[in-house]
Image 1 (cartoon, rainbow, N blue to C red):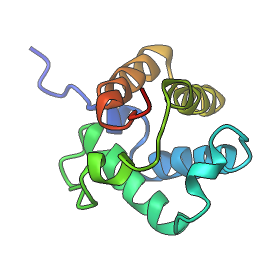
Image 2: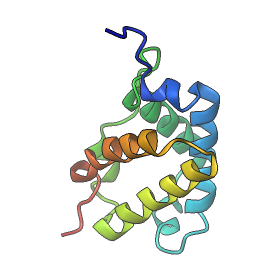
Image 3: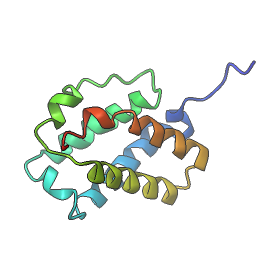
Image 4: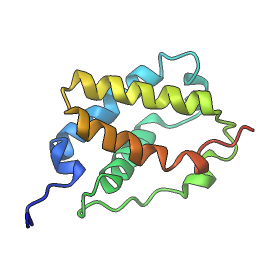
Length: 124
């Protein structure tokens, strides 16, 4: 048995790499006509900070606790569509590919993200 199995957070390269992923991600999002309107009123440094914490915890970093608002509370009034959620995932995927994250790890990340669709997408 391999007790040294790395969590996804470690596989991605830890704090610095996950921070880089999120920073690059929001850079892309803010230039995306389909997505940028959702962030017009947002404090982007706060959004990035909370997203980094959320991703770190979601990816298995036991030292990070997401302390932001409940995901439903954050997203319920943003009227996010499935198309926008898919585009969000596409940007994430492309940046991870640029960072040369192995496919198997990238797929695991996208599966983790997908699990949250129902608390983010509210546009029927």
